[in-house]
Image (cartoon, rainbow, N blue to C red):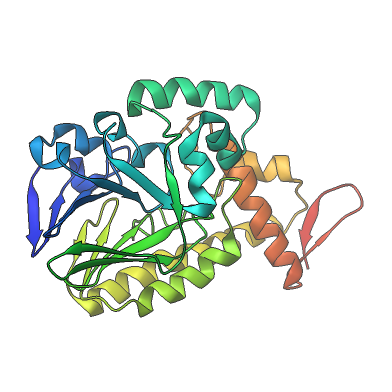
Length: 297
């Protein structure tokens, strides 16, 4: 059994270690006419009838750890932002979402099937920014598109409770993750500004922090989380005091500690470092050399 926090119509089932990856935190929202789940992380497999009776699963975004309980809910409708829809519908769509080389994708398929009970949902349908679900009895949910982590990443706000599920803007010490093909550093920067403007008094993350109920605390946690982006840029500029090419930077790591060797890590590093290099070059902080290396200006 998971521990549960209740906020009016919303129950938050805490995953292991407050939803630390590979687990997550499960939200279930009960209206007069409909019961809805936000995502289905690993903890969903430890929840009983309360989850089994959901009518609809709204995915705030698509990654393997947010789909780990969908296999239990073949009867429930599934909706996801249109930019992430293909990734929910098929493995081919998920592969394009990740954007990794084929050997890494093959290794990932084994992992997501074994550790995350992966089942695609070809029946999933799309929603767009501002979509609203009326669950009855005055309980309303609205989607706010906050891309960057994925192209379709959204916050799901239960307006009747002032509760914002902000997904993988998760306020962790790791910082923002933008290592996949549909990730965007520039979009993430904008989303980090917009998430602070949501009309909410309770913030729930997919991972780690779980629930924050003090606005000053939320803003401090958000600022600390966002600051990791500029810290990474500074770290890269430090590396580039001497010329490096992209392969050399990937081997030095920007996101993950040395020794953390999951199959996708070099790909995520390459994608994220590439975004930082493009940003730093546009800002005039680095310049490319003719041999493919970069150096700080």
